[in-house]
Image (tube, rainbow, N blue to C red; front, side, top):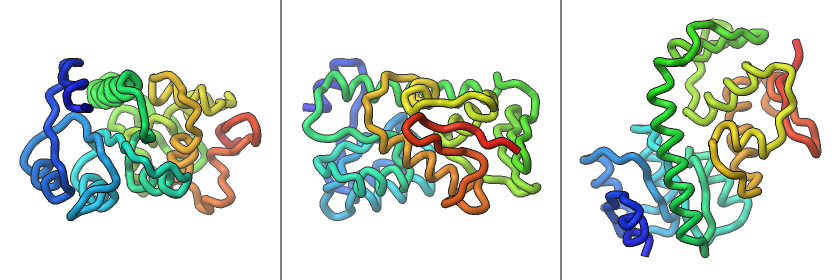
Length: 216
């Protein structure tokens, strides 16, 4: 059903019906997006996702009937870009696929169009020309989504962002109210940039409102 609908939306879709087949296909071809079910035979979706993230930053959307917060956090923590819960509408799925591919394409193109300046906040330097993040002279490896979130805060150092504003700015799509997507990406970013992630100083939480860049 998904393949037929996306084909009608002008996407070229290849299907793999178990994790090992998916792994083989991914290693031998280039894809613009991975639409991943978690409940796969032979090699489960989480293990497949971990394999993908050792090789590529291709956007990954998880689709699954497993709707607990733990499953969402686990999937996004391994590097998924979005999560859609079954049952879902084909219209919403197609919208998310288009948005994920658009964001990925813009991310690649915009690397050469960013300002040639270095934005520094306390001990972190954001090199927008070379798309690098350094802390105390050590490079921090961020995903494209983590980069966009950090860049958003660094460029708007006095602004408070709601989760909806972050989603619209970073994902460039309508906000579906799923806070786990925002929460997990913020958490992963804190693990990489904060000295003590449980007591963040760079990205501060304003309870009931959203997030803002810390003041130094």
